[in-house]
Length: 144
Image (cartoon, rainbow, N blue to C red; front, side, top):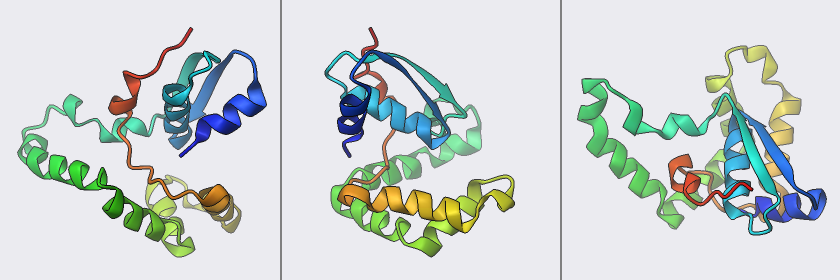
């Protein structure tokens, strides 16, 4: 994924990145990949990256699942497995079902939203999966 290429080509001056939901993860990725020093800060709203933070969960039932969760994380970091899943996610019906499962108001999940997201996933031949942990990227961010 090369979020930075568009960011650095378009913005061309220092900026604070603001992201909502999965856009927060996109901002973290852009900031972690930035080598130009253009990222001055991050504002992350309704962070989707937190969904992958098992370290802050203090429930014994979740702790029992840690080995399984670590296995899933490991498998999703394998390019072949993650790419196969990503290819399925990009299919229109699967994408719509995923959106319906996370949106509180199902009325917001319309054909326009699905097409906007699908178009972005298909643009420029995106093949890198979005199965990233924000914790893996935070250490790489240098805001000036």
